[in-house]
Length: 317
Image (cartoon, rainbow, N blue to C red; front, side, top):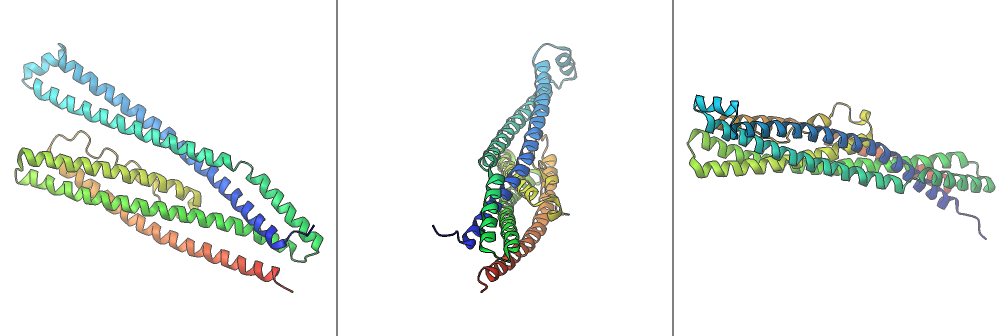
């Protein structure tokens, strides 16, 4: 029986170290996704409460009640009822959206939990790989055993970090693409809103305008989903790695953009606010892209240096 190849054992330590680092990253990611689940639960509960209030207001105006009698005496019963029904409808849509967001958050948490559990034995496997490598080096009498062990460990950690950076870059790209698409939809909605407001677009223009508004709202919902994923990936890199680039504060900014709009001027104001927020987000994503590119170069250089030193030790006469 031939003795184990030290280089193969070093590779085994590196792979085990990478798996262990990945397991620990998943533990951090799971904490983040579970916090998001609770946030979404609270959001849904609040929106359901608002829906109940809006539905109660509708019932009061529909039934024979002091509210309806007073509105009738003032001569605005029909207008009040139309407004309350519109607000109740918007509240119902908000509840449905919150439920969908909660369902996605629960699914994400379940996925991360499954991946983490699949690597539950990573620490033990790493210990066994390290022990086998150490025994072989001691048996061979290698003078560089300690350094090779340290290099194998560092390579595993560096490779895991490189993977985390790549995932963050991918999430950033998806977020940027979603934001660009949403801005196109928003500009289209803004154009129709201006036409309808200043040039008396009429019934058809009003329908087209609200269709574009619906598309813009849906597009910014996708931006939020991409931001949630990006925020999770950035958490894996550690707060210090993204200091000054706080993505989490943008989460939920664009949800239900045009809820309870009652006038053309309010539509234009909401569109203006949304564009300003989107432009600020775009600037921060650009800064983040530069930061990720810089730490990716650092990680790659670190791995290159470790591999060169490892090769020098293992191939030394």
